[in-house]
Image 1 (cartoon, one colour):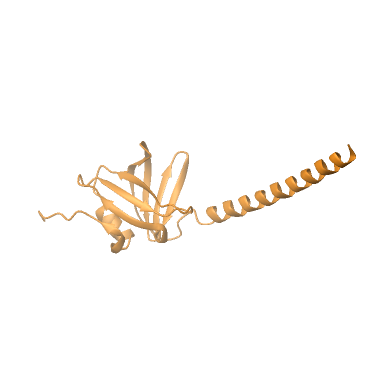
Image 2 (cartoon, one colour; image 1 turned 180 degrees about the horizontal axis):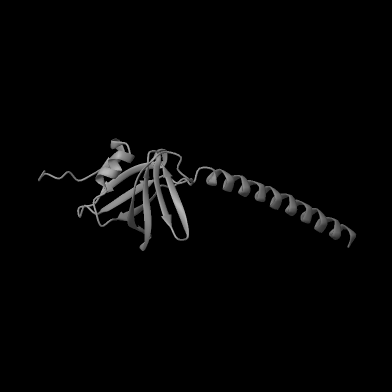
Length: 140
């Protein structure tokens, strides 16, 4: 029984060390993710939009900053820096924009911006042209 107790005690110590290390890693990861969650550049404009992600549509306020896109909702906000933006593509109906970006995880992610008005001018002012795929209006 004494040997069993010693093994149990050693296992508890090892488990507590592992949990402490996991907590430290999670805390460091969280602080790194939240370090840059607000824009610091100049505000270029704001538009009310709808965001579609995984089939769920929610209303948000889209702010165009010189250093990225900032989405504000009732329950939180999302800031996507220029360095994390991969591509912004305009759909055929001209009022839907698919945003492909690289979150902090390995896999790229995407969502759709649905607007009541064209966002082309705002997006061109905010995002480098090489990352934009806009439908050109031939009627102009």
